[in-house]
Amino acid sequence: MLAGQILNGIVTGAMYALVAIGFSLVIGTLDKLNFAHSEVFMVGGFIAVAAVAWLPWQLALIVIFLAGGLLGLATEFIAFRRFQTNEGKVTAALASMALGLIITDLVHKVWGTEPVPLKMQSEWLQTGHTFFGATVLNLQVMILVVAFVLMGLLHLLLQKTRMGRQIRALAESTTSASLLGINVRRVTQTVFFVSSALAAVGGLLVALRGGAASSEIGLSFGLKSLAIMAIGGMGDLRGALVGGLLIGVLEALMFQMGLGRLVEMTAWVTLIAVLMFRPNGIFGGGIHAREQRA
Picture 1 (cartoon, rainbow, N blue to C red):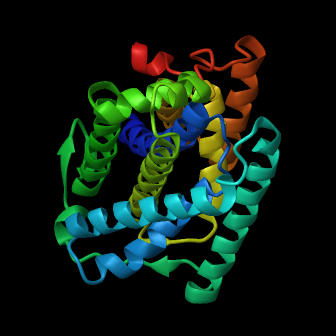
Picture 2: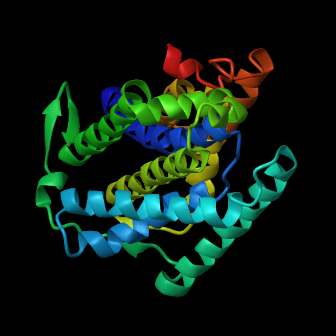
Picture 3: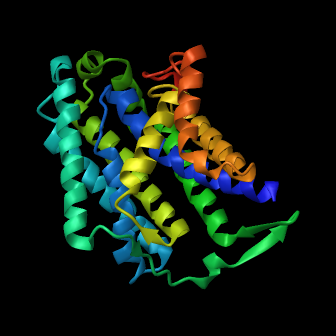
């Protein structure tokens, strides 16, 4: 059914958006590209394997959020703290890539290279209801609720809190923010914590939906989220959301039309098509604070 496929697309798109927003938050605020972000996303699924086996998924969600945030702080300390200048941006990006490879290797050492089943304690997530001929699982509803609640909380953080104002000031100018008395290091750490926490939760949601955690999703799903960020506009949080939902629905429609073999090309073909007409992405690549001012 078309309605069911579109719902699947929206669910997938929400997970894409959650990861792409993490990419956008770092590059939009700090003008840094964190290649370890995909691996933090992947690790979220494996942390879920351990957490969900002992805890209800609601508590596991909190544990994974905090664990992802701590990984983000570690990434900032290891790969980015020493490279604050413009000349150090490439070095920092390469350091984050190396850190991501180390994370992947550690996952292989602990859990192996094969997907690890995720044993859920809640049968409620697997039950569903039929609407207009399409079966809607409680799991799908939960994924959408968690993803959009977290994105809404991020919006509130940026719009309504003192830390949000400081993040926006840092996005405009690191030098000006420092002259205004803003603790640049603390704000930078907050950005890494939040972006990585969102990625880890995204890893949980993907593992819940697929029933297993896989070390391969960091490369496939994570890189696709990087493309989605570029489709929406580098550093624009609105663009990450719209781009994620767009690609999710387009992939679902490809399945509906019997073109499942071409699904993995969808994000990349869309990226090329968008950049041909809008080189800065759908929302013009607002890498500073235009999303927050909207």
